Length: 213
Image 1: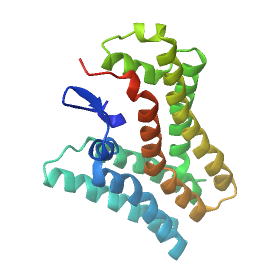
Image 2: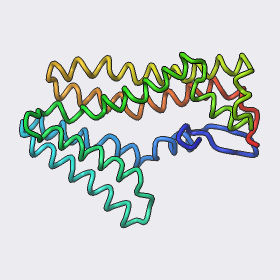
Image 3: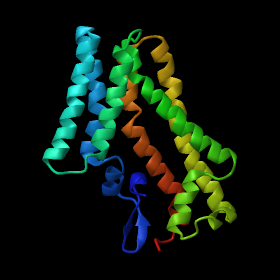
Image 4: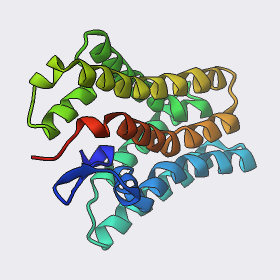
């Protein structure tokens, strides 16, 4: 629930600026998810050197992990980000790789999440509906309420649209080898659009979540 920005306040499920920010990892989480890709693009645009671009991105990611350890904060998100950057580095520097491959792992992530969410909507078991059921202490019976089912379908579809839009915009840039434009699209369509989908989902669902039990 924290990942979707929902928390308990005065016995009720709610979403506010603080919880929305927490859902994307706080300011540090935003920086961790955006800066490595931005650094890769900036260095590549300046030097056209793939190795230097990857090294700079890896260095930034490693710094975040060390910072989390040094400040005794949870390192899960930083390590997950570092592993993703590591995979991107491997794809980029492997034999036959090219700079645009830095973004390939993101395509597969969007395909996986988007496909799972889309399938859940098509079979009328929208995944976000399970969140509503959990908050209402109705693990499965929420689906019998047509109003909740419809709203859960719409909220889940928002995220399907998000993941699909990322692919629709970014894949043509990848195949056109437009590295700088692809990097800008990756950052712009990351945290900002994810937060927007959370907010819109909350507007759809808040009346269906009466209180946290």
